[in-house]
Length: 239
Image 1 (spheres, rainbow, N blue to C red):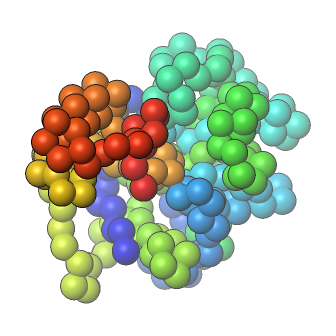
Image 2 (tube, rainbow, N blue to C red; image 1 turned 30 degrees about the horizontal axis):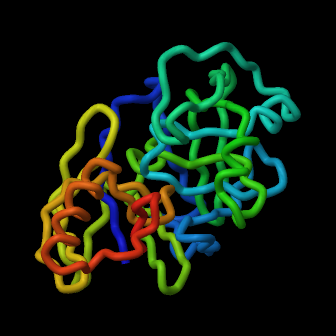
């Protein structure tokens, strides 16, 4: 179970997004698919048929595919303000000049600053994931409390002003800057000593990934001391 607080991500187009619940102050038990570690939701954009979107805490804005934006008649202008969250070199980005609504069962997210970009290369990178039409990112996490039940594959959204957590979960300290949300963890290989690491909280990553520099430094130490990490994959990704 994973419950997010309000995430204040500043690297976004600067609009205001809001949620509207169909009833009360929550939208519980929204089903999702878990594909290669990524949460895939079925989202309706401006009343269109639901399509696959990835829930991504690492994306600094909500994103729709450029193809869908054009087919639905969204007004678009070039966006030069930068974007974080989809690859190291994202394609050219446009800003939707029209308000966009993202609908899930029991709740609608309205966003006046949605980005549009080609997702063709992103689809290629995602492997077995379904045909992805967009990403729900930081605006959703700023507008609502998000509870993710990975075991049950259910997502629940709550009004922040009335939400009260009731459960046996642990609170994990986080740190936020203008781009990402971080947390400190301990990582230990088999027979190796634990190492402290500062990681980005990113539900769109699909796996626990370490930077090349971090992995190389601690792999070398582990191999010298215990030969514990023999056969590590070149991409230094741990599941």
